[in-house]
Image: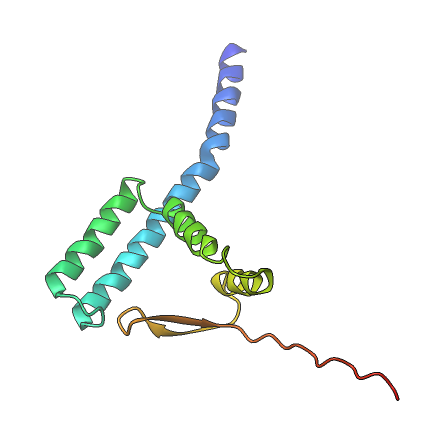
Length: 132
């Protein structure tokens, strides 16, 4: 009887950690895919960096992801930083700024070319004239 209870408790504990394991595996899979993409960009010369330095940085990023130092936390920090840059703007502009950071609108340009241009079009209706 006690061995059955132990097995049930052990299974419950294992199941409670399963989402964490799946999340870690997904992060590692994403890191490997990102590494392959970065490596291909290095080999094609699209990055504007020396190939050796580019490959070294891509490998270092993969290693950081494997050790858990790179991933969702780093992305959250980047996103938080980008959104904080909208704070000094007037309220209406700050809202549009946050919307662009969160992916609304279009993005053009490249980091290699000097930067990304995020653009969002907001249609504002003309004021209605009162009837004479």
